[in-house]
Each structure stands twice: as structure tokens, then as C-alpha cells.
Figure 1 (cartoon, rainbow, N blue to C red):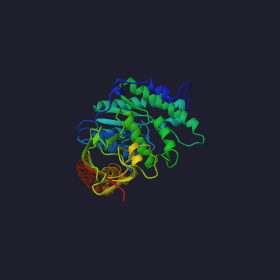
Figure 2 (figure 1 turned 90 degrees about the vertical axis):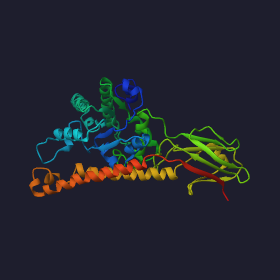
Figure 3 (figure 1 turned 90 degrees about the horizontal axis):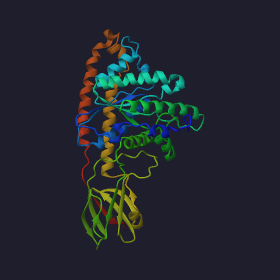
Figure 4 (figure 1 turned 180 degrees about the vertical axis):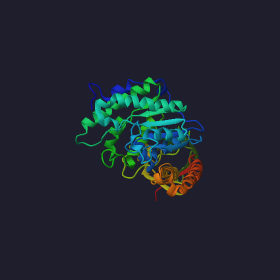
Length: 393
């Protein structure tokens, strides 16, 4: 897809800032806020983005707040209530302030791009004003491009506009020395790996998995698909996180420990993943071998397959990661109901004289959120796992 005479990849790769030269590092005590339209709001249901950031820094206390809003733009127009004031924009500013961010992921442009070239100037002004507010709060902004429309029918004009706005976002980030992450092109490529949307626009579970992977790469983090290599014949390993415990020739068994840097991302059902976590074991005799961890079946493969490398997609680490993801989703769901109660008008709005007594209940939800954050902190650190490879009988 072309924008003028340049593709979005060509235009944005030449627009960089000093900030993007180094990987994003989250610090202990950081408070990350997701701000934007449905692209971020819908991850409340899936939890992949927060899971990716949480597991990358398991030894650090980082909290997250998702205040994405479906249909929203840089002016907060979708955040309107019957109560006035605040205006939608004032509510947007209020919610950003109350979130107390130190890092803000900003994902706008998808809605505004519908205005085409005519709306570029207004969008640019609104984006800069929003970034001024984030800067005023002493927070760092990470700007994301829109994602493409993934339909094969009549998508070209819409994607051309989305690319146009992606270039505006990249240019704005460079001008302000802020971090910019292109997710347009990675999500376009992810389409070939299976269905990643429900309706060509909104991502499904697999879509958010691939979005998390694209975000990690855009933030300068190394790929999670590290290959662990073990030579059974030599009783050695070239992987620093692997330690051989025993290798018995008589029984052709191998026991080793993996001390992973971070938990893996759980793989969605019906998703085509090229490589999740690979284990390569050379020097085995012919035959099939079973890999278990803590008594749980992990994989079964032939000696030749182990020598080439076997993808590991289940086991204790994945179980822990799924538990962590469930905690994240539950926490975000409760926070959603706290900051966006369906009957807001009656509880805190101009008709609060009717049901204002329930406002105290909203505050109590915050206690549950805090408790869940404590549970998240207990589950985010990977623990060494002992694996055993034995001949299949």
C-alpha cells in the first residue's frame, strides 16, 4: 500500500528520535497507562499487552491502568456523558491525571483517519495538545501507529488514510523526541498467520497475541523465542539458562533445569506460531522421547526432531503465564467497572441524589484492584523448572 510515492514502512523508518535508539526500560514504581481507542480498550478482555510488559520486568513493581475507550479520538469525543460539565475533553484530561502515569502508551489516529487529508491538521494539533498534557504530568509518551483494516474488499482507500496518519504520528514523535512504534506493518504481516480479527477491524485473541509480539519488537526488546541447545552426547549446553542435572546412558534419560528470564506468552488456540520456545537436544539415539516437567507432559518427538529443535508450547511456565494473564484480566475488568460505571450519571453525575450512596462502592472496588495487583506480583516471576527426557515406551 502506498502513501503518495512512499509506503508507510519507508516513511516511518526514516523518521526517528533519540529515544527510540535504546530499548524501553520500565523502572520499579512505574505506572503505565494505556490510552486510546478500541485497540487498547479491547485488550481488557485479553490481557496480552499488559502481560507482555509485566513479564519482561518481573523483578520490578510496575502497575497498569487501561483507560482506552472505543471510538475515542485525541479530543475525547467518545467519552461524553449526559453530565455536563465535565465536557468529554475535560473528562479525558481528568482521567489521564487521575491515572497518575509515568509512561503512557498512546494509540489514536484510527478514528481520526476517517476524515482523510482534510483532518490531518486538526489531528496534529489535538495530538500535540494531548502530548503536552502527558508531558505536564512528567510522564513519557509511547506513540503507536494505527493498525490496518485487514479486509480484502475496499480496504485500500481506508488503509491509505491510516498510513497517512501513521506518518503524522511518527513525525510528531520525532519532533518531540518521543518513542514511536509502527504496528501497522507487523499486523499486516500477521494476517498471513491466521485470523487475527473478528470483523477485519477489531483484533481477536490471536490478534492481541501478535500485537504484543510486535510491540515488544518495536520497544527494542529481544525476541522471546530463544533456542535452548543441549548436547546429550557431550553432556553440555551452550545455553546459560540451562543446567544439566544428569544424563544416564544406560537408560537414555536426561534431566536438566531451565531458569528462564521471563514467562512465555500463552499461545492462543487456533493460532499459527512459527516459534514459541524451542528446545534443541542433539546426540540422542534413534527413537522417540517424552519430555516432562514436574510430572506434566510437555512434548513428544523423535531423536531427529529433537536435534532440529522442538517448539515448546505447554508446561509449568505456560500454566503460570496463563494464571498471571487471568489475574491481569480480572484486575482490568474490575478497574473498568470502577472508572466507567454504566450508571455513572446516577452515582456521581447530576442525578447522584438518587443513587449517590453507591459511590462508596466504587471506591471499594479499588481495594480489590490493589489485592489483585498483589497477586500479580506473586505470579510474575518465573521459577526454575526441572525437565526430564525419557525414551517413549
